Length: 486
Image (tube, rainbow, N blue to C red; front, side, top):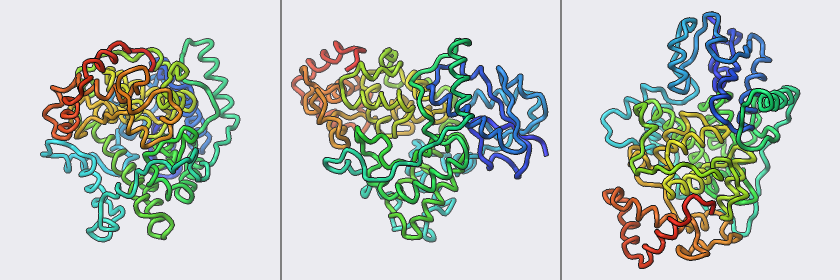
């Protein structure tokens, strides 16, 4: 059997054709020269590669580039970026590129569903995927009689709570491989001019399949039930809430997403987890994760440069360098510190704190996608392209999302405990106490009123904008704020 070249995001057994198949891993230093990744992301990837290399039949080659390392004939599963696919097709030693693995649905499934549709919506794709794979189905009907149980989920955090009353995810115990990785990264910074963003810290995410399976079992047993109600809630004292913490091992290929959702469905069928929580979790894996993967390949290569709202400002230094201490707005400071200290925050801080702020200020969408790619431990080009360009920044003007995810401080106040301890008032839009999100929301609408006028979901907000008596003062205030940290 021809050896299999495994990329660093293809580390699970489902990327091999049979147990014992010879596998080749490549640790390329050039990858880390090209971009300033988060230090903890670099650590996680190298730790995962080196741990996988301890398995029988797996060989790790350390080289400057992939091309230098591939000196024997290999097969490879379809990689997760266009650049990597281009490299694979150019290397003469790659004798076969197999279809992609690591996702529930196939490209053929997606194109069959997408063909002829003017707009691609995750909800429609998600229902098709559940039917195709029999997930949370009772015959031809969805379990419980409804496809979408959002009305039972997405509650604000419990009143007066500082943390959710759920067990912490099992801690990762570092070993001598992690110790060597940390020493190597220190040396790269010291001697090779390789730079990182964010702070070093203990490894927080699984780097082995065993660690990933432990996290999965713990989540399904202890954290899945409260996940649904509080999946969109934020608490300053609880960065993990009840989230699974499985995005990083999933995106390293340590877990097969189908085994993940089957474990969750099994908990529902056995009466160990409520349907609403399980449906919300399955939606994230089979819905959003697969949908975003397919959009990366389905949209044209130039999609990443989409900028329909003409947002052209560069990321300010305080944001790009994760300088949370420069920020007074409590929500943004805490979330940016989470990225700096952990390389991870959950999906609502990403969308409604980080992405919302950037869209309100008109920062360049491509720069935001690159920042998310580099700064998050689970960030990859395929993950961030449609998520940021389309959903977070609405730069594709509705090809994948029906309206901009813009909101004022009222949303953050309802879904978190941030506003109570903040110097800004979420109800104030003009003046010294004006919330940057509330003011930024109306400034965003004013700047893009013409571009958004044809969107029926924006009719009510735009009518509200036209009734504001202080819109001119508000716009001038936000222009004066410029790129300063709020």
